[in-house]
Length: 227
Image (cartoon, rainbow, N blue to C red; front, side, top):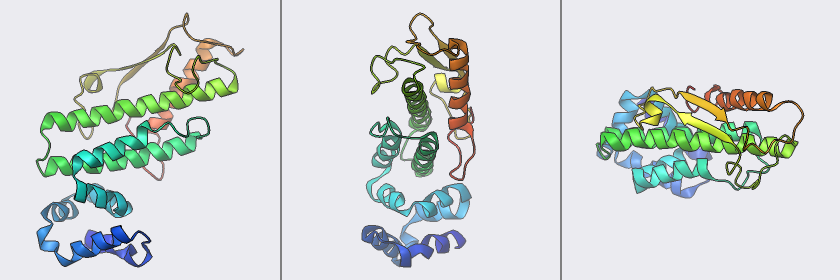
């Protein structure tokens, strides 16, 4: 009941009429929403995911987990702001997407809508795409600063010389809800289009540290994966 009341609190402030109608319809048939009742009664984390993002919750519960997961993943793979996005902005974007992915995967798991292999695969794919997005961001930053001369700045990974290997459960696509991700980060010195003057090793050591920070740092939006 506490989580349900918190979910209904912003009704008077919601501008999205579709979300408002969705919440009100749920209020009229609370006994017919066992999945929502199960989450609110047993998972404070997933409850907060719903409460903090009612628009996405509406999409998920009306359209199903396949649509919800594609929407969550789209928040990671979007490249439209690659040239202008700040590190703080990508941190927020990835964390919001992770919250949505966690809600989607957890709901599909609880409802037995997805088999175990789909659950672990979705978690692993989300981690992979998050790492790709972070790598793109950091490579593009180095290009814009003049440390690298990327062959295709709009596709920073291409011929960048950066190699990120996922080890353990990530490499096997077997991540679970509490998994961290183990990485080996390498660079091919014969491929890297280096144009800076601070030393190639220094540049990629800093990139690795920044990658871990973007993925691992706890902000007001949470974190992406322990790395």
